Length: 323
Figure 1 (cartoon, rainbow, N blue to C red):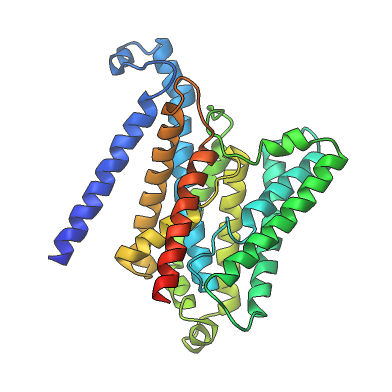
Figure 2 (cartoon, rainbow, N blue to C red):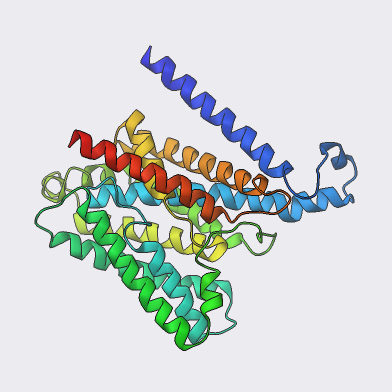
């Protein structure tokens, strides 16, 4: 009976995903008729090929990548409330992009991503080192520590932005927005695909990390190596999403928690569902962002921020109730 429920739930998720993909390709200022594909020189076809398809692909890959990144960070930190949003990871990527603008103005996106990756991996290692020194690992204290760490990085970024008069450029990275995604300016996000594969290959070892450092070592796991691999995967994914679409909060926090309620903490089992639900949630939020003040758009960072923030508070209240 449980297996049948699992199959039915997965089928419904896949069906919902397919519906949202079609909606993402269809909804917009320019009305699309699928009959227009009979004429490949039609302007509607050009809109789909140049704008709608790249945007939908970017949404799917960003949703998959950030959700899996949150799952990895929760396994490594042994805390369900740790994610790129609550560990300073996104703030570090933003700081890296800002520094690249100062040192290499007008540089290509690949250089900006390189700086974002460098700052992100350094910040992730620093955060993990701080966790190692905490004696009492409170469920709420650790994400609060990460949020404070992220605020420090954000303050440093604001200081340099004011100093070099690029505050406006910095603000563009504050709120995630997929409206400017076009063919030719989003391809860096494909880096998240091999990261997903690598994460799946290391799923069993990452699951073992969730048992604790001592237990992982007793089972023959090279703890430091697996943690480093996990942090590298997270840093690359967050950097590619930041360069492509900007700051997307809370996705890596709420999706793994929702999946773990139904499928537990075994990554081999929960990883595909986490990826699917992450894509569904980001597609859903993007469609809401397009429709709420149609024909204009609300940045998706605001939509996912509101939904994610409310969900975060619900999870905190629920965890505190059963603690």
